[in-house]
Length: 470
Image 1: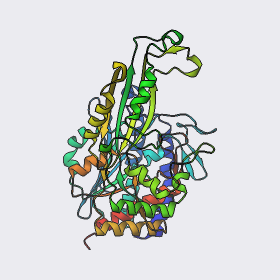
Image 2 (image 1 turned 180 degrees about the horizontal axis):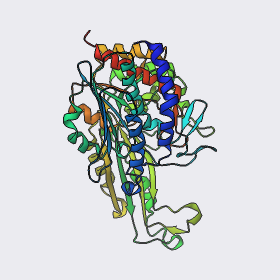
Image 3 (image 1 turned 45 degrees about the vertical axis):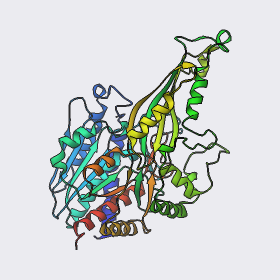
Image 4 (image 1 turned 90 degrees about the horizontal axis):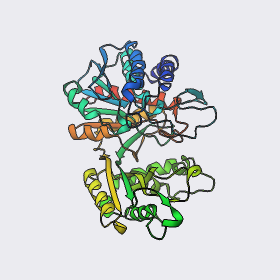
Protein backbone atom coordinates (compact mmCIF):
# COMPACT_ATOMS: atom_id res chain seq x y z
CA UNK A 1 0.00 0.00 0.00
CA UNK A 2 1.11 3.53 -0.79
CA UNK A 3 0.44 4.87 2.69
CA UNK A 4 0.89 8.54 1.88
CA UNK A 5 -1.48 8.34 -1.09
CA UNK A 6 -4.02 6.36 0.94
CA UNK A 7 -3.91 8.91 3.76
CA UNK A 8 -4.51 11.78 1.33
CA UNK A 9 -7.46 10.04 -0.33
CA UNK A 10 -9.00 9.10 3.02
CA UNK A 11 -8.66 12.68 4.27
CA UNK A 12 -10.24 14.02 1.09
CA UNK A 13 -13.18 11.62 1.19
CA UNK A 14 -13.85 12.33 4.84
CA UNK A 15 -13.89 16.06 4.17
CA UNK A 16 -15.78 16.11 0.87
CA UNK A 17 -18.13 13.15 1.13
CA UNK A 18 -18.43 11.53 4.53
CA UNK A 19 -18.65 14.55 6.80
CA UNK A 20 -21.72 16.10 5.09
CA UNK A 21 -23.50 12.73 5.14
CA UNK A 22 -22.57 12.05 8.75
CA UNK A 23 -23.84 15.49 9.77
CA UNK A 24 -27.20 14.64 8.21
CA UNK A 25 -27.19 11.37 10.13
CA UNK A 26 -26.57 13.19 13.43
CA UNK A 27 -29.68 15.30 12.87
CA UNK A 28 -31.92 12.21 12.98
CA UNK A 29 -33.03 11.17 16.52
CA UNK A 30 -33.01 7.46 15.69
CA UNK A 31 -32.95 6.30 19.29
CA UNK A 32 -32.63 2.60 19.97
CA UNK A 33 -35.95 0.82 20.62
CA UNK A 34 -35.27 0.57 24.36
CA UNK A 35 -35.45 4.37 24.49
CA UNK A 36 -38.10 4.87 21.79
CA UNK A 37 -40.69 2.07 21.92
CA UNK A 38 -42.54 3.83 19.08
CA UNK A 39 -39.46 3.88 16.86
CA UNK A 40 -41.27 2.23 13.96
CA UNK A 41 -44.12 4.74 13.92
CA UNK A 42 -41.74 7.69 14.31
CA UNK A 43 -39.75 6.61 11.26
CA UNK A 44 -36.39 7.95 12.44
CA UNK A 45 -34.64 4.61 11.99
CA UNK A 46 -35.69 4.51 8.34
CA UNK A 47 -34.57 8.12 7.81
CA UNK A 48 -31.14 7.41 9.26
CA UNK A 49 -30.79 4.24 7.21
CA UNK A 50 -31.72 6.11 4.03
CA UNK A 51 -28.89 8.61 4.61
CA UNK A 52 -26.37 5.81 5.03
CA UNK A 53 -27.70 3.85 2.07
CA UNK A 54 -27.64 6.88 -0.23
CA UNK A 55 -23.98 7.46 0.58
CA UNK A 56 -23.10 3.81 0.03
CA UNK A 57 -24.83 3.64 -3.33
CA UNK A 58 -22.87 6.66 -4.54
CA UNK A 59 -19.51 4.98 -3.87
CA UNK A 60 -17.50 3.68 -6.86
CA UNK A 61 -16.70 0.36 -5.19
CA UNK A 62 -16.48 -2.59 -7.57
CA UNK A 63 -18.65 -5.54 -6.70
CA UNK A 64 -20.73 -3.62 -4.14
CA UNK A 65 -24.33 -4.47 -3.32
CA UNK A 66 -26.12 -2.85 -0.41
CA UNK A 67 -29.65 -3.13 0.96
CA UNK A 68 -31.86 -2.53 3.95
CA UNK A 69 -32.96 -5.88 5.37
CA UNK A 70 -36.12 -5.87 7.44
CA UNK A 71 -37.98 -8.40 9.55
CA UNK A 72 -41.51 -7.59 10.81
CA UNK A 73 -41.48 -5.77 14.13
CA UNK A 74 -37.68 -5.61 14.30
CA UNK A 75 -35.27 -2.77 13.70
CA UNK A 76 -33.74 -3.10 10.24
CA UNK A 77 -30.12 -3.82 9.40
CA UNK A 78 -27.97 -2.46 6.59
CA UNK A 79 -26.18 -5.25 4.79
CA UNK A 80 -23.52 -4.69 2.19
CA UNK A 81 -21.39 -7.14 0.24
CA UNK A 82 -18.25 -6.45 -1.78
CA UNK A 83 -16.97 -9.20 -4.04
CA UNK A 84 -13.43 -10.27 -3.27
CA UNK A 85 -10.32 -10.50 -5.41
CA UNK A 86 -8.38 -12.61 -2.89
CA UNK A 87 -9.16 -15.73 -0.84
CA UNK A 88 -10.97 -15.47 2.49
CA UNK A 89 -13.97 -13.71 3.96
CA UNK A 90 -14.15 -10.65 6.20
CA UNK A 91 -17.12 -9.40 8.21
CA UNK A 92 -17.15 -5.73 9.28
CA UNK A 93 -19.60 -4.61 11.95
CA UNK A 94 -21.16 -1.46 13.36
CA UNK A 95 -24.56 -0.09 14.37
CA UNK A 96 -26.65 2.96 13.53
CA UNK A 97 -29.10 3.20 16.44
CA UNK A 98 -28.37 5.81 19.10
CA UNK A 99 -28.54 6.48 22.80
CA UNK A 100 -31.05 9.09 24.05
CA UNK A 101 -30.23 12.78 24.42
CA UNK A 102 -29.14 12.90 28.09
CA UNK A 103 -28.66 16.25 29.83
CA UNK A 104 -25.72 18.58 30.41
CA UNK A 105 -24.69 19.49 26.87
CA UNK A 106 -22.42 22.53 26.80
CA UNK A 107 -23.68 25.86 25.53
CA UNK A 108 -23.77 25.78 21.74
CA UNK A 109 -23.89 21.98 21.57
CA UNK A 110 -26.92 19.81 21.00
CA UNK A 111 -27.34 16.05 20.51
CA UNK A 112 -29.15 16.45 17.19
CA UNK A 113 -27.25 19.44 15.78
CA UNK A 114 -23.85 18.59 14.28
CA UNK A 115 -21.02 21.01 14.98
CA UNK A 116 -17.34 20.78 14.08
CA UNK A 117 -15.14 22.46 16.67
CA UNK A 118 -11.39 22.04 17.13
CA UNK A 119 -11.25 18.96 14.92
CA UNK A 120 -14.15 17.25 16.67
CA UNK A 121 -17.59 16.52 15.25
CA UNK A 122 -20.10 16.91 18.07
CA UNK A 123 -23.51 15.26 18.08
CA UNK A 124 -25.20 12.04 19.13
CA UNK A 125 -24.19 8.90 17.31
CA UNK A 126 -21.26 9.99 15.13
CA UNK A 127 -18.63 8.17 17.21
CA UNK A 128 -21.08 5.58 18.56
CA UNK A 129 -21.43 4.30 15.93
CA UNK A 130 -22.38 6.16 12.77
CA UNK A 131 -18.86 6.35 11.38
CA UNK A 132 -18.45 2.56 11.14
CA UNK A 133 -20.15 2.06 7.78
CA UNK A 134 -18.33 5.00 6.19
CA UNK A 135 -14.91 3.85 7.41
CA UNK A 136 -15.52 0.24 6.42
CA UNK A 137 -16.51 0.99 2.84
CA UNK A 138 -13.87 3.69 2.39
CA UNK A 139 -11.17 1.27 3.56
CA UNK A 140 -12.24 -1.20 0.85
CA UNK A 141 -12.43 1.56 -1.77
CA UNK A 142 -8.90 2.68 -0.84
CA UNK A 143 -7.53 -0.76 -1.66
CA UNK A 144 -9.38 -0.93 -4.96
CA UNK A 145 -8.11 2.48 -6.04
CA UNK A 146 -4.54 1.28 -5.48
CA UNK A 147 -5.18 -1.97 -7.33
CA UNK A 148 -4.67 -4.05 -4.20
CA UNK A 149 -6.58 -7.32 -3.69
CA UNK A 150 -8.94 -7.93 -0.80
CA UNK A 151 -11.11 -10.78 0.38
CA UNK A 152 -14.87 -10.85 0.02
CA UNK A 153 -16.22 -8.37 2.55
CA UNK A 154 -19.63 -8.34 4.21
CA UNK A 155 -20.67 -5.26 6.21
CA UNK A 156 -23.42 -5.60 8.82
CA UNK A 157 -24.77 -2.45 10.47
CA UNK A 158 -27.50 -3.24 12.99
CA UNK A 159 -30.25 -1.11 14.51
CA UNK A 160 -30.61 -2.38 18.10
CA UNK A 161 -27.11 -2.50 19.61
CA UNK A 162 -27.87 0.16 22.21
CA UNK A 163 -30.79 -2.02 23.35
CA UNK A 164 -28.59 -5.07 23.83
CA UNK A 165 -28.79 -6.20 20.18
CA UNK A 166 -32.21 -7.70 20.85
CA UNK A 167 -33.02 -7.95 17.13
CA UNK A 168 -29.64 -9.09 15.91
CA UNK A 169 -29.86 -12.88 16.46
CA UNK A 170 -32.81 -13.10 14.09
CA UNK A 171 -30.82 -11.33 11.37
CA UNK A 172 -27.73 -13.45 11.95
CA UNK A 173 -29.92 -16.49 11.30
CA UNK A 174 -31.62 -14.89 8.31
CA UNK A 175 -28.35 -13.78 6.72
CA UNK A 176 -26.37 -16.83 7.80
CA UNK A 177 -25.38 -18.01 4.31
CA UNK A 178 -24.63 -14.48 3.12
CA UNK A 179 -22.50 -13.75 6.19
CA UNK A 180 -20.44 -16.71 5.08
CA UNK A 181 -17.68 -18.13 7.24
CA UNK A 182 -15.49 -15.11 8.02
CA UNK A 183 -11.91 -15.75 8.99
CA UNK A 184 -11.63 -12.13 10.19
CA UNK A 185 -14.22 -9.98 11.99
CA UNK A 186 -13.55 -6.24 12.24
CA UNK A 187 -15.70 -4.40 14.78
CA UNK A 188 -15.62 -0.59 14.81
CA UNK A 189 -17.57 0.08 18.00
CA UNK A 190 -14.99 0.11 20.78
CA UNK A 191 -12.76 2.45 22.73
CA UNK A 192 -9.31 3.90 22.20
CA UNK A 193 -7.00 4.87 25.05
CA UNK A 194 -5.85 7.99 23.23
CA UNK A 195 -6.09 9.50 19.77
CA UNK A 196 -2.42 9.08 18.93
CA UNK A 197 -2.20 5.35 18.14
CA UNK A 198 -4.19 2.32 17.04
CA UNK A 199 -5.96 0.44 19.87
CA UNK A 200 -7.04 -3.17 19.96
CA UNK A 201 -9.80 -4.24 22.35
CA UNK A 202 -8.78 -7.55 23.94
CA UNK A 203 -11.82 -8.15 26.15
CA UNK A 204 -15.34 -6.89 26.86
CA UNK A 205 -17.25 -7.09 30.09
CA UNK A 206 -20.72 -8.59 30.23
CA UNK A 207 -23.73 -6.65 31.45
CA UNK A 208 -26.60 -7.59 33.74
CA UNK A 209 -29.45 -5.08 33.88
CA UNK A 210 -32.50 -5.40 36.08
CA UNK A 211 -35.02 -3.57 38.25
CA UNK A 212 -34.97 -3.95 42.02
CA UNK A 213 -38.29 -2.95 43.59
CA UNK A 214 -39.42 -2.74 47.22
CA UNK A 215 -43.10 -2.25 48.15
CA UNK A 216 -44.38 -1.77 51.72
CA UNK A 217 -47.73 0.03 51.29
CA UNK A 218 -50.46 0.26 48.69
CA UNK A 219 -50.32 4.08 48.69
CA UNK A 220 -48.26 6.88 50.16
CA UNK A 221 -49.18 8.12 53.63
CA UNK A 222 -48.31 11.05 55.89
CA UNK A 223 -44.77 10.46 57.17
CA UNK A 224 -45.57 11.88 60.60
CA UNK A 225 -48.35 9.36 61.07
CA UNK A 226 -46.58 6.34 59.59
CA UNK A 227 -42.84 6.41 60.24
CA UNK A 228 -41.91 4.30 63.21
CA UNK A 229 -44.80 2.01 62.39
CA UNK A 230 -44.13 1.08 58.76
CA UNK A 231 -40.59 0.48 57.52
CA UNK A 232 -39.19 2.77 54.86
CA UNK A 233 -39.08 1.15 51.44
CA UNK A 234 -35.93 3.13 50.72
CA UNK A 235 -34.20 1.87 53.87
CA UNK A 236 -34.99 -1.71 52.93
CA UNK A 237 -33.69 -1.08 49.45
CA UNK A 238 -30.44 0.36 50.87
CA UNK A 239 -29.96 -2.79 52.89
CA UNK A 240 -30.56 -5.00 49.89
CA UNK A 241 -27.89 -3.15 47.92
CA UNK A 242 -25.42 -3.99 50.68
CA UNK A 243 -25.90 -7.63 49.73
CA UNK A 244 -24.41 -6.79 46.33
CA UNK A 245 -21.82 -4.11 47.03
CA UNK A 246 -19.47 -3.00 49.79
CA UNK A 247 -20.55 0.58 50.35
CA UNK A 248 -17.07 1.63 51.49
CA UNK A 249 -14.97 0.12 48.69
CA UNK A 250 -17.40 -0.43 45.82
CA UNK A 251 -16.36 -4.09 45.62
CA UNK A 252 -19.11 -6.47 44.52
CA UNK A 253 -19.83 -8.68 47.51
CA UNK A 254 -20.89 -11.84 45.69
CA UNK A 255 -17.81 -14.00 45.23
CA UNK A 256 -19.52 -15.91 42.41
CA UNK A 257 -19.33 -12.74 40.27
CA UNK A 258 -15.53 -12.56 40.42
CA UNK A 259 -13.03 -14.33 38.15
CA UNK A 260 -9.20 -14.21 38.14
CA UNK A 261 -7.73 -11.70 35.69
CA UNK A 262 -5.52 -13.55 33.17
CA UNK A 263 -1.83 -12.70 33.37
CA UNK A 264 -1.78 -11.54 29.73
CA UNK A 265 -4.55 -9.03 30.40
CA UNK A 266 -2.71 -7.72 33.45
CA UNK A 267 0.39 -7.24 31.30
CA UNK A 268 -1.65 -5.41 28.65
CA UNK A 269 -3.17 -3.14 31.28
CA UNK A 270 0.27 -2.37 32.69
CA UNK A 271 1.60 -1.48 29.22
CA UNK A 272 -1.42 0.69 28.43
CA UNK A 273 -1.17 2.41 31.82
CA UNK A 274 2.47 3.16 31.12
CA UNK A 275 1.42 5.17 28.07
CA UNK A 276 -1.82 6.67 29.36
CA UNK A 277 -0.76 7.45 32.93
CA UNK A 278 -2.99 9.99 34.64
CA UNK A 279 -5.32 10.19 31.63
CA UNK A 280 -6.84 6.82 32.62
CA UNK A 281 -8.70 8.74 35.30
CA UNK A 282 -8.30 12.19 33.80
CA UNK A 283 -10.49 11.36 30.79
CA UNK A 284 -13.57 11.58 33.03
CA UNK A 285 -15.39 14.89 33.73
CA UNK A 286 -14.72 15.01 37.49
CA UNK A 287 -16.57 17.40 39.77
CA UNK A 288 -14.22 19.73 41.63
CA UNK A 289 -12.17 17.97 44.28
CA UNK A 290 -13.34 14.41 43.57
CA UNK A 291 -10.69 11.72 43.21
CA UNK A 292 -10.74 8.25 41.61
CA UNK A 293 -10.94 5.02 43.60
CA UNK A 294 -7.19 4.47 43.12
CA UNK A 295 -4.14 6.46 42.07
CA UNK A 296 -2.69 3.46 40.22
CA UNK A 297 -3.66 3.61 36.50
CA UNK A 298 -3.00 -0.11 36.06
CA UNK A 299 -5.42 -0.92 38.88
CA UNK A 300 -8.00 1.43 37.38
CA UNK A 301 -7.76 -0.27 33.97
CA UNK A 302 -8.18 -3.72 35.52
CA UNK A 303 -11.03 -2.48 37.71
CA UNK A 304 -12.90 -1.16 34.68
CA UNK A 305 -12.32 -4.16 32.41
CA UNK A 306 -12.18 -7.33 34.56
CA UNK A 307 -13.81 -6.58 37.92
CA UNK A 308 -17.58 -6.76 38.46
CA UNK A 309 -19.11 -3.40 39.30
CA UNK A 310 -22.55 -2.04 40.21
CA UNK A 311 -24.12 1.19 39.00
CA UNK A 312 -27.56 2.63 39.71
CA UNK A 313 -28.79 4.06 36.43
CA UNK A 314 -32.38 5.00 37.22
CA UNK A 315 -35.01 5.30 39.91
CA UNK A 316 -38.78 5.13 40.18
CA UNK A 317 -41.04 6.13 43.05
CA UNK A 318 -38.89 9.04 44.20
CA UNK A 319 -40.69 12.34 43.54
CA UNK A 320 -38.71 15.23 42.13
CA UNK A 321 -37.45 17.58 44.85
CA UNK A 322 -39.92 20.29 43.97
CA UNK A 323 -42.91 17.97 44.46
CA UNK A 324 -41.65 15.85 47.37
CA UNK A 325 -44.07 16.17 50.28
CA UNK A 326 -43.85 14.68 53.78
CA UNK A 327 -44.97 11.27 52.61
CA UNK A 328 -43.79 7.76 53.35
CA UNK A 329 -43.25 6.28 49.91
CA UNK A 330 -45.20 3.09 49.20
CA UNK A 331 -42.83 1.66 46.59
CA UNK A 332 -39.32 2.46 45.42
CA UNK A 333 -37.47 0.86 42.50
CA UNK A 334 -33.97 1.18 41.15
CA UNK A 335 -32.51 0.14 37.82
CA UNK A 336 -29.29 -1.78 38.44
CA UNK A 337 -26.51 -2.22 35.91
CA UNK A 338 -23.85 -4.76 36.82
CA UNK A 339 -20.77 -5.06 34.65
CA UNK A 340 -19.53 -8.63 34.65
CA UNK A 341 -16.04 -10.05 34.06
CA UNK A 342 -15.51 -11.10 30.43
CA UNK A 343 -15.45 -14.85 31.09
CA UNK A 344 -18.30 -15.02 33.63
CA UNK A 345 -21.46 -16.87 32.62
CA UNK A 346 -24.12 -14.15 32.45
CA UNK A 347 -27.12 -16.43 33.08
CA UNK A 348 -25.51 -17.83 36.21
CA UNK A 349 -24.74 -14.30 37.41
CA UNK A 350 -28.35 -13.21 36.86
CA UNK A 351 -29.70 -16.15 38.86
CA UNK A 352 -27.26 -15.51 41.71
CA UNK A 353 -28.06 -11.81 41.94
CA UNK A 354 -31.80 -12.46 41.89
CA UNK A 355 -31.49 -15.03 44.68
CA UNK A 356 -29.34 -12.72 46.81
CA UNK A 357 -31.75 -9.79 46.53
CA UNK A 358 -35.04 -11.62 46.96
CA UNK A 359 -34.24 -14.04 49.80
CA UNK A 360 -35.55 -13.30 53.33
CA UNK A 361 -36.93 -9.81 52.66
CA UNK A 362 -36.89 -7.56 55.77
CA UNK A 363 -40.33 -7.12 57.36
CA UNK A 364 -41.63 -9.48 54.69
CA UNK A 365 -41.68 -6.54 52.31
CA UNK A 366 -42.56 -7.26 48.71
CA UNK A 367 -39.13 -7.43 47.03
CA UNK A 368 -38.50 -8.32 43.41
CA UNK A 369 -35.55 -8.23 41.05
CA UNK A 370 -36.65 -8.50 37.43
CA UNK A 371 -33.85 -9.17 34.97
CA UNK A 372 -34.07 -6.97 31.90
CA UNK A 373 -31.06 -8.33 30.05
CA UNK A 374 -28.12 -10.56 30.80
CA UNK A 375 -25.30 -10.37 28.27
CA UNK A 376 -22.08 -12.35 28.34
CA UNK A 377 -18.70 -10.70 27.93
CA UNK A 378 -15.85 -11.76 25.67
CA UNK A 379 -12.17 -12.53 25.95
CA UNK A 380 -10.31 -12.36 22.64
CA UNK A 381 -8.60 -15.43 21.24
CA UNK A 382 -4.85 -15.22 20.64
CA UNK A 383 -3.94 -13.17 17.58
CA UNK A 384 -2.61 -15.01 14.57
CA UNK A 385 0.95 -13.90 13.81
CA UNK A 386 -0.08 -12.24 10.54
CA UNK A 387 -2.79 -10.19 12.28
CA UNK A 388 -0.52 -9.12 15.10
CA UNK A 389 2.03 -7.91 12.53
CA UNK A 390 -0.68 -6.22 10.48
CA UNK A 391 -2.02 -4.28 13.46
CA UNK A 392 1.44 -3.06 14.46
CA UNK A 393 2.40 -2.13 10.90
CA UNK A 394 -0.89 -0.28 10.39
CA UNK A 395 -0.45 1.75 13.56
CA UNK A 396 3.11 2.70 12.60
CA UNK A 397 2.04 3.60 9.06
CA UNK A 398 -0.94 5.80 9.96
CA UNK A 399 -0.17 6.96 13.51
CA UNK A 400 3.60 6.71 13.65
CA UNK A 401 3.37 4.88 16.96
CA UNK A 402 2.94 1.23 18.01
CA UNK A 403 -0.51 -0.24 18.61
CA UNK A 404 -1.63 -1.13 22.12
CA UNK A 405 -4.27 -3.49 23.51
CA UNK A 406 -6.56 -3.16 26.50
CA UNK A 407 -9.88 -4.44 27.73
CA UNK A 408 -13.04 -2.41 27.44
CA UNK A 409 -15.48 -2.01 30.28
CA UNK A 410 -18.56 -1.98 28.07
CA UNK A 411 -20.33 -4.70 26.10
CA UNK A 412 -20.78 -5.44 22.39
CA UNK A 413 -23.26 -8.34 22.23
CA UNK A 414 -22.46 -9.06 18.58
CA UNK A 415 -18.88 -10.04 19.37
CA UNK A 416 -19.83 -12.76 21.82
CA UNK A 417 -22.48 -13.98 19.40
CA UNK A 418 -19.97 -14.21 16.54
CA UNK A 419 -17.30 -15.80 18.70
CA UNK A 420 -19.70 -18.60 19.62
CA UNK A 421 -20.78 -19.06 16.01
CA UNK A 422 -17.28 -18.92 14.51
CA UNK A 423 -14.84 -20.18 17.17
CA UNK A 424 -11.84 -20.19 14.80
CA UNK A 425 -12.32 -16.61 13.63
CA UNK A 426 -9.81 -13.84 14.25
CA UNK A 427 -11.14 -10.58 15.71
CA UNK A 428 -10.02 -6.99 15.34
CA UNK A 429 -12.14 -4.93 17.72
CA UNK A 430 -11.27 -1.26 17.70
CA UNK A 431 -12.88 2.16 17.78
CA UNK A 432 -12.63 5.90 18.30
CA UNK A 433 -14.27 6.33 21.70
CA UNK A 434 -11.35 8.02 23.40
CA UNK A 435 -10.88 10.53 26.24
CA UNK A 436 -13.87 12.86 26.73
CA UNK A 437 -15.66 11.51 23.62
CA UNK A 438 -18.47 10.68 26.07
CA UNK A 439 -20.66 8.24 24.18
CA UNK A 440 -24.06 7.90 25.90
CA UNK A 441 -23.52 11.17 27.78
CA UNK A 442 -23.51 14.87 26.89
CA UNK A 443 -21.07 16.41 24.41
CA UNK A 444 -20.38 13.22 22.46
CA UNK A 445 -17.86 13.82 19.71
CA UNK A 446 -15.99 12.08 16.92
CA UNK A 447 -12.26 12.89 16.76
CA UNK A 448 -11.86 13.54 13.04
CA UNK A 449 -8.11 13.07 12.75
CA UNK A 450 -8.25 9.80 14.67
CA UNK A 451 -11.12 8.36 12.64
CA UNK A 452 -9.28 9.09 9.40
CA UNK A 453 -6.21 7.25 10.69
CA UNK A 454 -8.32 4.34 11.95
CA UNK A 455 -9.87 4.10 8.49
CA UNK A 456 -6.38 3.82 7.06
CA UNK A 457 -5.49 1.13 9.59
CA UNK A 458 -8.53 -0.91 8.59
CA UNK A 459 -7.48 -0.65 4.94
CA UNK A 460 -3.95 -1.76 5.82
CA UNK A 461 -5.22 -4.77 7.79
CA UNK A 462 -7.50 -5.78 4.90
CA UNK A 463 -4.55 -5.55 2.52
CA UNK A 464 -2.39 -7.68 4.81
CA UNK A 465 -5.25 -10.18 5.25
CA UNK A 466 -5.30 -10.73 1.47
CA UNK A 467 -1.64 -11.83 1.53
CA UNK A 468 -1.56 -13.37 5.00
CA UNK A 469 -0.16 -16.64 3.67
CA UNK A 470 2.48 -14.95 1.61
